[in-house]
Image (cartoon, rainbow over all chains, first blue to last red; front, top):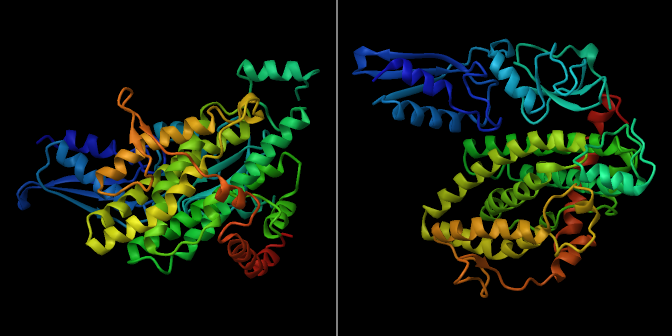
Length: 159
Length: 301
């Protein structure tokens, strides 16, 4: 078993709700380690984008399958509740999210026309996403953000 | 802002693959058609969310409750997005849309005019109705001419895909379960198959404006057929019987052919006099009234 290969396969697991965005793109993979004391067990530590995310079960199952297909015999997936933040999203992740109409963080720009956004609702489809509107084209955009990155409410506008 | 001198110019723009944006001086018939379509989608997402919410406290186990909670948030979030996109068309304000819905003057999808009797009914909804919705939404997303709608549909479609996987997981639990569980699902399937066939709508008429202006890219029959070809074999493989005595496989094409559809029940839902229409509208009204204090606290009219 090649740990690097296992790690690459784990990073390539796609988020069940975000098209082709992977958990590696989102910065959800904390570590992938080999535990020699436990007969070559692979320990994967993930962090959810928010506590109570309903996708964690599906993601953990997919990680199990990916790691085993990459040659790991025994895999342990655990969730680290340390707060996730949108700053952990990779450049590739930002690019893929923009294609879905999702900006990253409060400073995120409109994926359609690159203008400023105004938050219109604290939550959209998930608790790690707010709803925003573009100040230029008026498009409705989701903004991905961690719970530790509170919304700048001065930007809040009712529509 | 783009202006089209004649309807022929506009039609040509659409045929050439153009995308209409909210600031454009679009023909008023186009504006009305697109608005009507998005308003019905928004209403249906709201009713879908309320229907899911009912099951949060009734779902078996904390895992399922969590999933239903999240799905409720998804559907309400979709409704929120869609009402904003619809309101931007300036045909009706958001408040008017809500008023019309609560007063029973608006349309919402036929499947929300029926009662859910058991947990298995909700699984049929989560699996088959979400799959049917996904089939129709994917066809709109493919080349919808109205830009803001197409762009939010991209996110809605990825989220509905997640719901369907959840529905499939719940279905497999019943299919692998006891005879009682299997019978429960079969009984629910017997109740829901016709409404699911109706969901795609009656045969599309020639000259349909939504097709002409590339809001929809496929006819209702084509979408229904795509669904049938995929889900009939799947349900059979899980050990269930599709409740259509005329259902058969065409020997030469190998395709599944369904029996004639009786449209009477669909027409009743379209006039908001379906089996559970009144109760559903009342439920949404109660939910709206019960959350008045939130809007008041946020100073939203």
